[in-house]
Amino acid sequence: MHPKSLQVLLRTPNSRRLQTLTFDPSQPQTLRDLKLSLIPDNGNPDAFYFTANGKLLSDDSIPIGGPQVPALSTLTLRHRLSGGGGDGGATGAESRDCYLKMYAEKKPDKVDPNEQRLSKWVNCALSYETLRQPCVMDRLGNVFNKESLVEALIGKKLPKAFSHIRGLKDMIDIKLEPIPGGESNNAWFQCPITGLEFNGTYKFFALRKCGHVLSAKAFNEVKSKACLVCYKEFEECDKIVINGSEEEVEALREKMEEDRARVGKDKKQKKVRNGDVVAAAEGGVSNGGEMENGKIESAGTNNKRFKAAAVAPAHATKEVYASIFTSSKKKSDFRETYSCRSLPLGRN
View 1 (cartoon, rainbow, N blue to C red):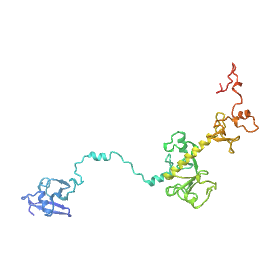
View 2: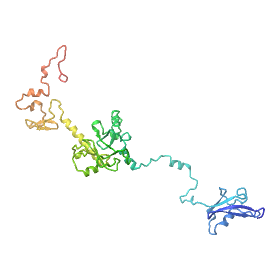
View 3: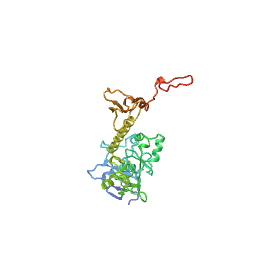
């Protein structure tokens, strides 16, 4: 080796081993000269670039042995990545704003449907705390910790989703069977008949009359009109599906509204107002009267409203019978003195 020769180390894409190149300082060469000597004749020199000791050398006219490529430097020949020519690649000219805007709005995390399903079966629908006895259920099949629901009712803090719960009468006390030994398959309760876990994998029903919670499999395997735990008889309408599908919840909601409308109608029919007999006996109305719109109507009277005396039983004095429902005194019988007003409210 000539004492004044120049040596550099070279690594190419086709070989990971370092090669030692020796140059004559009297015949200076540039990086482009070296590149042309390394790539094939049909290759594109612009598709390659050099790095010296890890630093990018963007100019092919840099001389070998100069300040940027001194002796014993390690040159690495690399492929230039495609892009920047309208083919969808990066040009390096993009603004950081486009990336900042991309992450400016936080996208909601995807909810695992299995986790969402499990949460409805192991947690209170209101407080999201783990279910613990005593538990209650509404008429749509949602399960609650009784303490949390009562506190929300007293404090009037029930969310709009549970506005159908108006009081204690809308709660159904349920009896959940704990799993012996604690949790099993993400469940704390089970069917007392089949042993299936209360975790949403299987369908469960609650009985309104006794509150026992049983799996659908138990009802299918043992055909009975009595509870399989306490043997209390029930009807099919007493079964309420727990955490049912949208269609099942909608059917329960319609049934709940129908029951409330029927109860409201019954209460209206039993009221006694303005001296009219509003509620009639189950056997019908005597003296040819009919029950219509919660009031006693007499046949052949053009639907005119009758007083109680008009439907007095046979052999009964009308005034005495009417006194059961209204005051027996006439307005002319009341007298006002200097010390009192004997006229009752509404008659003066």
